[in-house]
Length: 210
Image 1: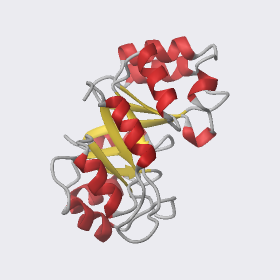
Image 2 (image 1 turned 180 degrees about the vertical axis):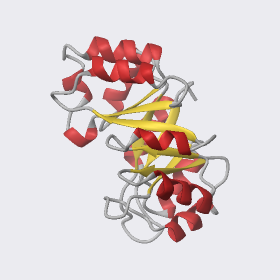
Image 3 (image 1 turned 90 degrees about the vertical axis):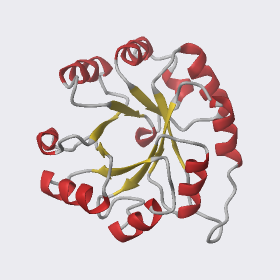
Image 4 (image 1 turned 135 degrees about the vertical axis):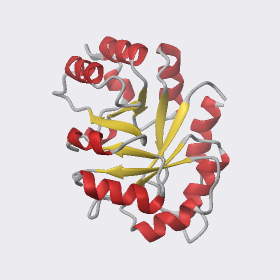
């Protein structure tokens, strides 16, 4: 496999968890913000964590307080947390030695240069920056011809960035030919029935990385 870290986002079922673990992805992300899409209560997260080995269980948080995040980290023995775009960064002071990944939602009006500066300011406190283009519907092909594309290349050269696009095998191959991010974000989906689903699309993406 290429030297490319893979974050499996918002795991919603054990089938996805075991699939990504079998591929050796670095992180399994679990949505811990009540009311958010793909939210899982702590007891379900704990049950899934117990089924997989060799992967970093990661809590995904949004507007929770530092105390709420700490409670979840201790309860589930989380080794990493992903802080959402709007999470108060004051929580960093309370997280101790837990690995921190920071999400940045990239939209049409987002200044990547500003994010570049903020990432520099957070050096030593954030392990990885997740640049999420999916929440605003920006495709890799569209962004690759935008003026900010060079800034993205520079950001990936100077910071540990995980890119989250709605990947196709073609767009992922194009991205990896253009530059080398620290990693990418992939996401599963609903089961067709309990314990059964098709992984054809994810297989294609992971074969590009392999």
